[in-house]
Length: 640
Image 1: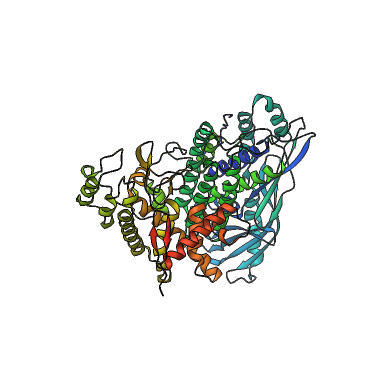
Image 2: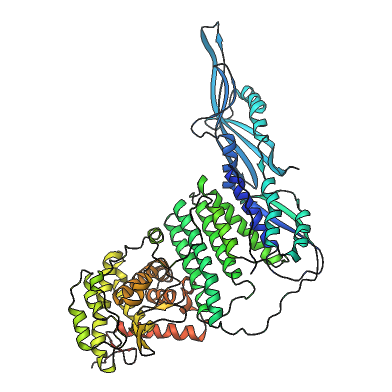
């Protein structure tokens, strides 16, 4: 894989840093993948500048000290023109500039006392944006109107109007948003991202860049970048048919690729959450994180194989679309403040990338770890350490962002259970059961289950202890959840049903004569099959593996989260309360995108079997059935 590296231009003007990122990431899309080009192709790359970005840049220019008005004109103590609260907005697909005006026109009569008038109101201008030969985004003033503080035409309009035309208009027309520095950095960026064989073609495309006619819509100003990609014989790789699942070595390599990718997503989400977030955005960011992580599981499980040439491409494109929607929604709700404008720029760059990804011939570049690292640092240039640092430890900032309960205390060192390599004896289990504990109430019961792989004759005893632990944990999670009382009983059936279908209530198994924790190919662990890739940073991996009570509590918390965020909303929307547990389990099994899976006719046979089996087990619990671990099922006894 090529080393993707480039220097993002920056100085003391952070706005240009974000514009530089727009250009770099947009042009990266021009040369992302091999494709078929047989002739030179002229392309338009629409560079969209959102209203918030435009407003912030003009406000910083017009009113750099927000605590006091800008002096446009001042002559003595009694003649001046001040401006404050500058605003750029889009109306009817036209940019408008509005600012509050404070004017005083007077003289010092006979050198004794002032005479004259003081006036305040506002001016509204209709603008035409353009980019000049020096790559400066500027504005022509097409029309302007002056209003008093009540919104009417002022009596002294002529006098103030002359001052405005003399001092305000020229000041506005001097404004320029400098696009040249980031444009110059594009050359170095793409050269660093290109192989020697591709460098000539990249240079030719860059040297052909011209700016088209600027367009305006209600989403902002669009600056079309026109470039010509030279044609050549670049063949598109042909498919070799059905791909085989990843072998062990390929899986290991893919896992190494996923680690920095997941770290990148976490970094972006934590950055956005730290800067601006409300309840809606918090839910959307969690949905994005979990969706990205669940997307990996079919690959890890061997169901599908990633693109060998660029395994991150599909993941990147999908995540970028979702992130763009989240940030734009936050802007519409008024969350985006000056500090967050870089996120809007970041998302708009991604929009340009997606446009090019669908339509532009590509020149063989890839998303690499170094590229992701540079993107992360573009959002947070002052971050300490490596933004793609990856580990399996609990991340308190991530848990806090999504309002997870504090981690339960770990058992004291002197009370930790001694590992065993064979089925524990009855005396060993009794010893563990009666050991004192400072754990939560359910832990004493859980401790008696540690490293127990039950023999057939022990299933009744094992089932009774697990059932008691499941009930205890469920009660604790319900007490902290503030769940709507109409769904409490549903949750009480949901937890044991999920545990049964996921693991047959087993935390441990025998493997090569040794006791180990239950683990799936995709990395799901223990009795509740908590996936380590999906829940990295939220839970302690070692405790998920070896502590039954901790594993059940994590799974129950996740079910509660999914029930509130996905299950109950779908049930309410569908006016069908029975949808709540089914939707919750579908998300637990396959991620947020599967919330309506059980309702669809085009789901795969495997998914239909899984959803059908869950519904069957849940209904048996609901009917008062008793678990039969020998069959991993629930028995319902009929009474006359």
